[in-house]
Length: 547
Image 1: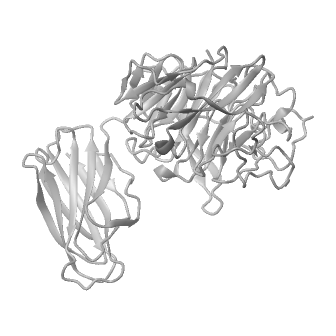
Image 2: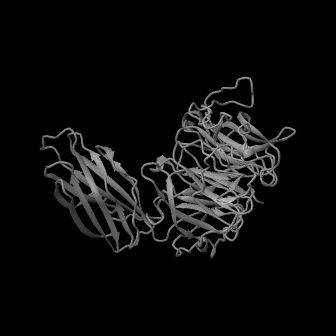
């Protein structure tokens, strides 16, 4: 079954990337999964959202026998349970939101809030349903799917154009109709107390409240979206820009990806006058100009229905894949990624380059078929949902990656602790600059590294350390010895304002744990110095090469 209205066409040659992804089945035995949603309370827990109204729980990669919840939905074609989202205050409220089709004599798309039992967090009660928002559908298709809370804390919901083909009522350009739009709601309040189906507030900065460039329904965030089955935010929690990628399913010629920087609402993406950059209906006048064209599109020789899509900000796939946007096509079963380039001032995507196909990485074992969703876990690692009943995780063979940095004393003042890694020759790298404020006392900084292999003959540790002032500060470099459960001194140096490089080589037997973990520590001694107001220890580079 196709979970959305899907069609496409080809404008770019798509080179194959050498097979260096190793997709593995993370979960099997589910039914028509349409989303894989991370539990905000526990990084080891995810939820499989099934189109039939059932939500399954996965704990440490194991599908649980007890359902998280089951609700009654209208199914068939593109209908069913289509989206799930946790709000920023979920840890305090236990609330979450579902998007699904229902019927009260007509077809509706319903947004409802439910409450999780925080004492038994793997069970939710359907009886806690509280209706937030709904729209009536003239047809049964083009219901969109994903719902998500943006970095601003508001809920975003693409409504779909109402169905049939070609948006016969031109609802996408009608300012008095919520279909064919991106809707933005404040779910913490009620501006419509007389209407039991409208339990939300209008965010005060929604773009059409001022009547410029057009007077429109206050819920509308943007116009001209046909059927955005999947969209996603570039998560600031993963050091992202906060922008939104919208994968909009086309009619008969183009599949498209749109992008808007954080907060850049009020756009018109052009449907139904435009299908991508193709003039679909010359007789249709846009509600307002200018319209925003897609950053990327493809046509029918590539596939028939785009499944967006995530900008990769995890660690395990390495820097070659970092900040690549992954997407798939539901009809052709093909998987792709591209690299966006951003304008440093406006935040707009100015170029899409290096479009690559990854289907060959899937085909030898799995054959992805109908990819209904691409999602991420709490660390930004990617998973695809196969409508046939599996969740597949994207991995990379023989990869080594940084997992965490622990601050024993001192506070991070700048830099990106969750840094990129390079894994050629099984090499780990923390890149500049990870800075730690040391408030008039000694400090110890630990970096934890993880590899999926523990059978190495030796490791070489390189640390480029410095301080931010013209001092000469003693420092000690240590590796954790898993045999003795103690920190071994592997080097000493006097840190100065310019980088000081220290290189040591040790047998790996003692310093790589059976699970493949490596711990590195940098100790600095400031006790003999009269400190300035701000003194920082910086690791310009920490590198571990495993032989």
